[in-house]
Length: 244
Ligand SMILES: Nc1ccn([C@@H]2O[C@H](COP(=O)(O)OP(=O)(O)OP(=O)(O)O)[C@@H](O)[C@H]2O)c(=O)n1
Ligand SMILES: C[C@](O)(CO)[C@H](O)COP(=O)(O)O
Image 1: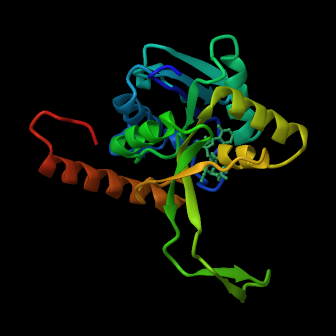
Image 2 (image 1 turned 90 degrees about the vertical axis):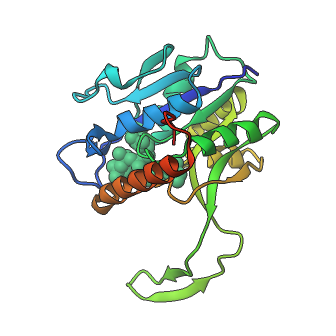
């Protein structure tokens, strides 16, 4: 395995739940597009990584100036997130080795902490299966009855929120996604495709503020998270250090 991972950033979504005038990765957050924040965080953690950026072929918003990586390629997104990631893996098939680590990170998660990225990479370096950043569920969990009332309370012990990045060896991830697609199984993350092959991905506890911007109120929340992270960092870091 090489010391730097491959990075796949699915960024071909339309942001339908956000309902904005453009895909959410192009909305402004602290004076920069969401995508620019996300790519900057990834670059701070893995400056030598090779990047695959999945974009809608009709994307009219993307600016290559936001990409700080020396080695990167644009890949056409697919109908679903899993299709976009599979396209990225297909695009690097001639370069990637089966045991290369591939980290997949949603463009819609701009608040991911650099320390979480580095820790995930350290943990996965020695893990035969791979894994994901995740956070334990904090609220009491209700199952609805389909009619707006509670059917029952679900036990929350052992429940985790799946975050990103999610990292797996190229060969395993490629096989898992191809198999899920061939069998018509809907997978919303890489881990579920790998689980379907019978493997148990490692849960790597991550910060709860690794928010996926999904609904309109999330943009302001992400802004507050970035401000809080910057403020916490400036209190602890030596002068001149800009990472978060
Ligand atoms: N066909 C798709 C769909 C999603 N994504 C990406 O997958 C990530 C997670 O998806 P989600 O939060 O659902 O984003 P959207 O699909 O844009 O949102 P929505 O489902 O509300 O339309 C995002 O970074 C999104 O850009 C992608 O690359 N290709
Ligand atoms: C990959 C993911 O971010 C993990 O939480 C999530 O599954 C993707 O979100 P979506 O809304 O299901 O596309």
